Image (tube, rainbow, N blue to C red):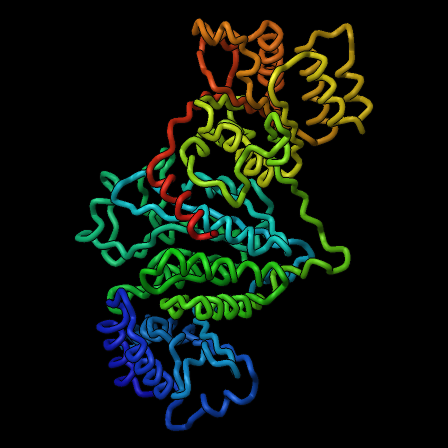
Length: 576
């Protein structure tokens, strides 16, 4: 093929395509036709291949060219340039091949030869590991990641998937979560946030003190353990997964599929494939938040129904076009040579594993027996409280739970429900019990007995008259965890109802003697057992010296931030 013409195309794209914020259709058409004519060549092989099928995947085999870089320096720019060119714009004079009704074409950049085996199609729901990154920094624009998660759940409601969320936004915590699951547990890793091409001139101010990065390094803006900015490279992500990559990775951030420095440095997506990932999706330029959400929604709906990965990407591309996303052509697909087709089977496949999850919202009821908390699809904000509380609820935490306090209407119960969703998604052996309002000893024991009524030994332990309440609870927690592998997430909602009105008015905020005894017994039993079971308490009031001895994380909710309020208002406009 004509290398001089190829080099000219690379320069043309660098000057007039990768520098654009808004695309003009006439220019995209012209560029697409030039790419088509170069690839078709004088032999017309592309034209001859098109009628053979109504769906085509064009594999850009860059493996041999890439391997030749060390032997022939002249091929280096050719190898990376082939990946850099926007083949998604291929246009035969009648239309973009990606938009044609009579044929569907998907360019795939194949960049790594591998012979190792990949697990085949799994007869179960799709397992999606989702991490959004949103550092608390005015230099980083907020993203609507809650809407992205909600849309994925909405799109797959008829073909449900298992959504496991790493809430921290931290690559170190991501690594800890991945290590907590068996190899090949996750099918897809979805990372959403801001991607950049680092240069000291443009982004040096984002680096932590003493850190250094070469110019033109593809990075993802993630969070450290306290929510500050951390720039994450391909090597950082590779260390988090340690070779245990899901079959598909979607880098839903700007520039993640772009070959930087005028097409001379591998994109983040390409470098991840080189580092061991199987299939990686990324964006070749800045992409609209709304476009990323549309693509993710369509992609996971297709994957959850048993579509092949490449078919699912075509579905996502078509949906972006149908939704009139002007940046539809920026989605890039990189992969190795291993055969990765369908990830899971469709819903009604015989003997398919069922998804075991019940939403907690139905257990959080008000005085009129109406659900009083936001659903999974409506939840917005509270990122830092959510992160801090989830740390306290981990099985490795020294704390035994959380105490969430704040004025009425701030979302304490909604946060508690969200915590239940997150904990149970990551540890599906958990049982959940929500108790609302006034506490009494017999009521607590009856509710626990009812929850675990199928276990005769548990009922006997709870109703042993010669043992104190603390002792009964210790024996109860030990039995459900050690004998039945079913730790409990116990929620005491609206705990302020255990504080007499007179004690609220005089400011002492002392709870009733019975409530104090029960809370003390629960906290002591959980602490002394040192097991997995956890406690969540929501209460309007928090006065530390009125609480019994405890190892609870105390979380006081403030008024929602303006950015979170903006997200809520936008979602109301978006959905209605």
